[in-house]
Length: 182
Image 1: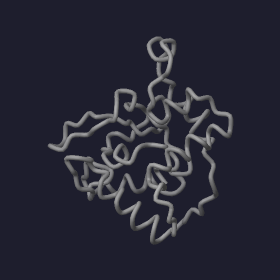
Image 2 (image 1 turned 30 degrees about the vertical axis):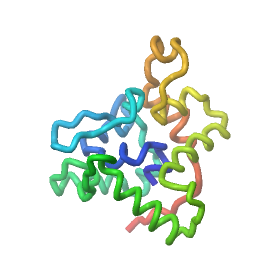
Image 3 (image 1 turned 30 degrees about the horizontal axis):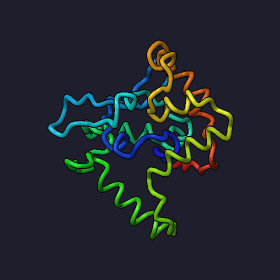
Image 4 (image 1 turned 180 degrees about the vertical axis):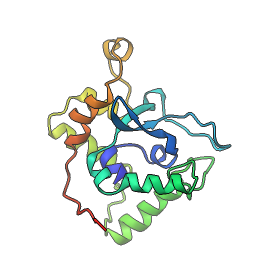
């Protein structure tokens, strides 16, 4: 669900610290960064544009993501997903990617197309927003792509979290996932 409602890269999500989920200007965001004062295993970003704030979709909140975070805090964890193991070559996402792509997609979901993987969520998010007429600048910033012009890349600042939330994130509407109220 995080991949579907953020468009973030797998390792960006897997390496999140609890402190990376925070309010910025009144909007709860994922702070995608490579700042890591807590561990010997460093966070990584693909490129400088990958450092960004991704507003958290209301669907994730309704599904209990904040409750999940509170349980992690109560357990004195530093990372959002403390059970994930670090790998020199691929950071924290390696085993999750293998499980998702080989076990879940192929065996559980029955998707046989080898071109489909966790990374496909990034394509899905980009295409979904494009089909809704969302400006490329919002989509690019959301996905952590470098802006294409000097005007936006050098002079233009990043979008405020509220702008990305309203113009992009909240426009990601795929299906109505039932929310368990127990």
